[in-house]
Image (cartoon, rainbow, N blue to C red; front, side, top):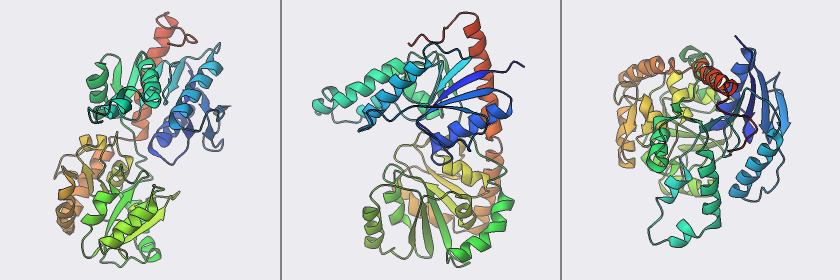
Length: 379
């Protein structure tokens, strides 16, 4: 099979963060399959992907999120001009790519939630207009990849786009996140974290605490439960005070950002993600791969993988969280859900994700050779 020369665009490539890991895992497997990969990024550890070529993109106009996005789009487009790649694949808002992966809801969907009377925010905000301009440009990309069906539906709802759209969910390392391996770690980790053998441990993994619903989860923690919070979320003081107000100061533990999150899956009895808005939710898939029962909010992309009561539980509203957690104190229920959760996760390995992308890359490369698109012409 022909070796492909790929340009991959992402602000940051790392193993922390959902999008960042998605980029790294797919790029790694492309390298392993003999393809050439040039990474256009602002932050990248060369040791992460040996064999990849790094093209640095500077931190110009980085004082706000919209200026950062505009700067990245313009700089990457400039650097790509005149280059010849089989495929240019972007994970960021931009307008010079063959494939664009969408890791979040459209900006237009966010604006739809503004009150109708906030004309200044919806129509007069320079920030919103800049994002919408970028978004309209990116929607001209021939091939779009949504990381979940919920994102694909958002695309159709707000841009009437269904042609050229693929859904490729994130994957999971099914060998690293494996029931046997977390079982080996469980006793050691619980001892290190001063967790009693009979404590019922709820695990929350993620940053952006409010969006991911940490304030909805804390009040749902009952007697005999402990909540481990892994991630570098915002407003720590507020969430700590919320735990105190709920009488849970000794039961809620903020552990910060950790490199080896697997050890906390090993300590957990259930993984919960009660997000208000979530394109996917990789912590749930990782928990499933570990053979743990999981609870996801209905409005998360990962909920599409869950059959309620079969391989996990879905909380349709925050009011259900406490009762759902109480149900999961039943050992037999946790065991049955965990077994079927693992079965589901095995179908979502990173190798499967790489297979889907490699197939898409080859289709796009052939189409470009046939003259259907021309790299270097920014749309």
